[in-house]
View 1 (tube, rainbow, N blue to C red):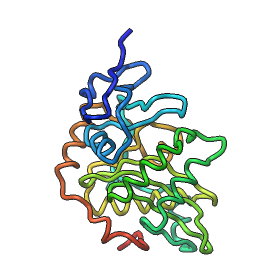
View 2 (view 1 turned 90 degrees about the vertical axis):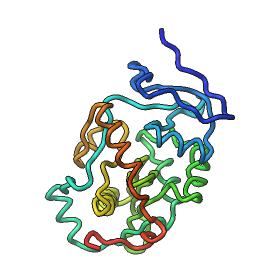
View 3 (view 1 turned 120 degrees about the vertical axis):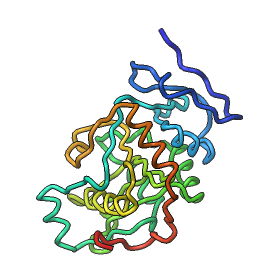
View 4 (view 1 turned 135 degrees about the horizontal axis):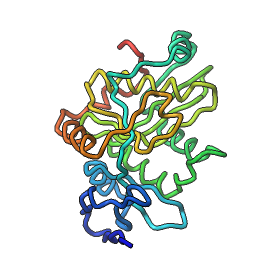
Length: 235
């Protein structure tokens, strides 16, 4: 049985993603650290952390990869109708800590992997300007949101939550609009599930993921400081 390498926390060097296991799909390495340097290095190499609190840090790069092309995103009829109500506000980076905490607390859903260490790590990454959140407010209250990492003109989605029906879908539609304006090659959704498929996500082979990753990393970096604040679908 093939064993994954153990990474020293002193030096951020990942194996080539073609070395990832077929079973469990995409497991590439263990160890390392959750510093901003490690996380940025991971995403630049097409790798992301995912592990339970009883496990060491595990690094993944599955094949096929679940992604969505922002400029090809078309909301469903029901979502399009919901978006036209305009009884909500969507903001970027208004309350990143609240979003990641809400994602970690989703009972009955996958999400327990967002441990205290992961929360702290991504808040540090947010403070460094690489992690970002989209928040949906209804009646002045946080109703849903999502967070992820942006490098170049790519967005690597991590998790989303909702307290009100369709709130996470509303933030997702706004993420697609923003990334589409920057002609992003993809939003990485990592691992497919029925909810992501309902939003238009598809699976692509690793070779295509590599191509899009290289394209997005070489593109001009998105100015998230300029984007921070209220965002509209048409501006």
